[in-house]
Length: 227
Image (cartoon, rainbow, N blue to C red; front, side):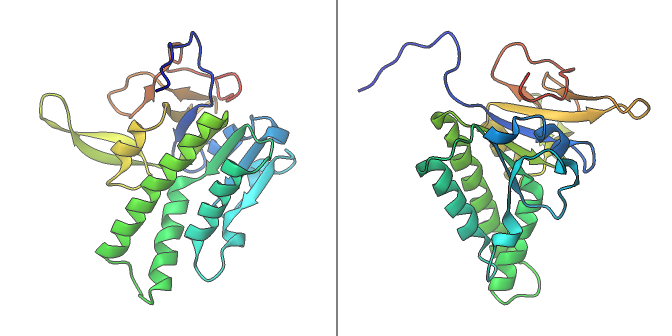
């Protein structure tokens, strides 16, 4: 048995969800991480915010053959877990688009025109698995950031009343569970007039946010290394 005394400070990586509507600046936020130590796993069509930053990017969709997206993601995780690579930060940009690509790939591979309950169930299971295994890279000293879009979800509050809160779009049915398995959940926000961006981590009546560490508040500047 290996029992340990709680340390004074964390000695591993951090797992974080950053979510917002498209265009608010999630990819731009990821670009604040050091380019030589960061791997950005791109599941979207565009890389505009990263142009000129010299960051290392893995274009997920370009690597997929015969609709086998699961194999590509699983192989990438295995590489990060078992090989020497020098990455201290891994950003999956973004999980919402990855989920849609997974639905499409499984549906096409099974020869169906539209996804059915079986496809949605299989996708939900796989997305939850990916969040957990990539999160566990923190024990190898890697900080993992899951970018996602946002969506409204009806939930019961402590009084049993139904309320609507904004969640990261990482599987509509598994979103609450996914938020529970990471260290930090932050909502990226932008001021309409000034364009100033900030991250919300503190308690909110509207947004699902979370931090297992002291010091993170509702007005953190969009700078991941500083956070």
